[in-house]
Image (tube, rainbow, N blue to C red; front, side, top):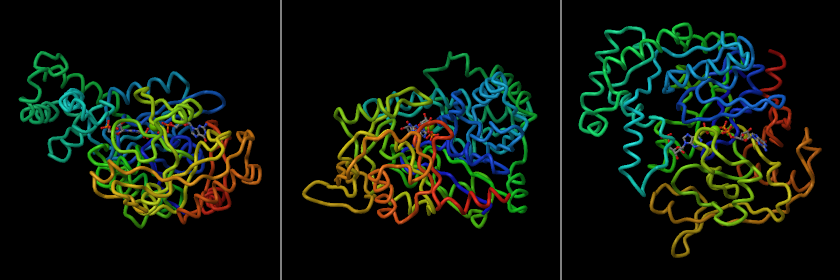
Length: 437
Ligand code: GDP
Ligand code: IMO
Ligand code: MG
């Protein structure tokens, strides 16, 4: 069982960081394969909270090879800030590697992200304003700056000039912005290159070597399936592919290296930013989920929109990612909600009903989640460590999800702490391998 992909099955913030941290203990390498510092992954260990935006969530194990893959877009200033912060917390970063082929977020990407949102006005996407979209756009336009370019002043200056030239009309409003001075930018980014140099590497061989030895490699996704630029709720998406297929491209391994794909889903649903959200709650129940689940963004601090678990969207995530297991997080947040609605289909205008996730934007914007009600539970479940410890109705909730999705639930989260987790028998293909590794 060497290759395990972890992906968000909803709109992000499902609890990927916590799961990757747990799996990393047994893994030989953890590899982030897409996204950038739009991500915010929280890990709570012995009461201490760690927030990662770029660094893979395996870094808390000293010396663990943790790779920022070629598919990631890297803001070097943010990465250096994260490295310095972790060092202050006493974390060993000797295992951190950054792909020389990863693309770099530049000051003009940040300005263009902000300007793009301002131009859209009421129709804004609600991006994290971290320059993600403009950086991926430059990558596709072959105008990107890559991590390796930070090591050569002449190449760096030429590439920055070439990247900025076609953007001149768009950057006109920022002409006096000191961050756009070519000389200064080259100097600053060369200095970032020097700081990052000990970590810059040719990273795919790290994965190949571990896979050749049949060791566990965790491919860590950011964002979530419904934010995927191809398969998500376009245009209200991010600019990369958070789906499992992208793990191969963003890490440099072939599809046959992937053995398992686990999707992470909350026991309910959240979204931050604009765009369709069929099971969204606009009432006090939505506020209750937000408060109980502390649903405020790790990256931007924005309040997350909340709603019931959406099984239509999850069934879609099962197919698009080829999920072999579901990690259900935050079941504890639902304690005391009785009955407990779950969306199993969508209703649209003129009596239309959808069992499948609609592909058409104008349909998707008008559908509403149709719910069935399951019996809730009132007992505190934060101390549960096996399915048997859960109240019967909580077990029935998990079983209902398995039946609706046709895949097993491999773990259940019952609190933010790393010990607050239930491993089911279905996780054994990974845990058994890990134990024998
Ligand atoms: P990620 O982006 O997918 O890594 O998720 P975030 O870290 O942005 O958001 C998930 C939040 O839920 C974090 O604050 C976690 O500490 C927290 N969390 C994860 N699993 C659980 C769980 O099972 N129960 C509760 N109550 N909180 C959880
Ligand atoms: P993690 O990895 C939740 C959302 C933004 C916005 C859209 C596009 O923590 O789950 P972008 O800045 O990427 O161009 O914004 O995507 N978004 C996320 N939402 N979790 C994330 O990451 C997100 N990363 C981006 O809110 O709606
Ligand atoms: Mg997050």
